Image (cartoon, rainbow, N blue to C red):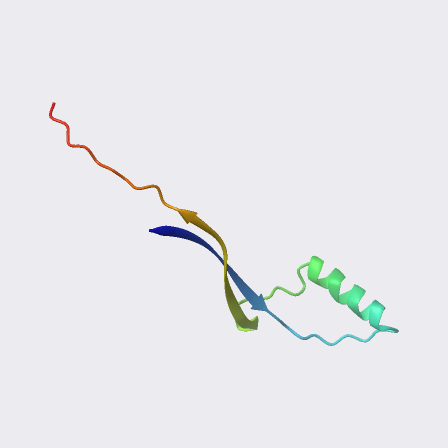
Length: 69
């Protein structure tokens, strides 16, 4: 028997519109608003999930011994 480490990556995505002088300004404004928690993504923003095995371990064989006390 083996033990596997599996990463679960959920993707949340939301599109927002802002007026700005440039693309860089728009991204800076949205980043700042996101950092201020003006945009909080939740389950309604879910767009996908990915599962990826990142590790594998051999399990040591477990032996039991009956002991009379």
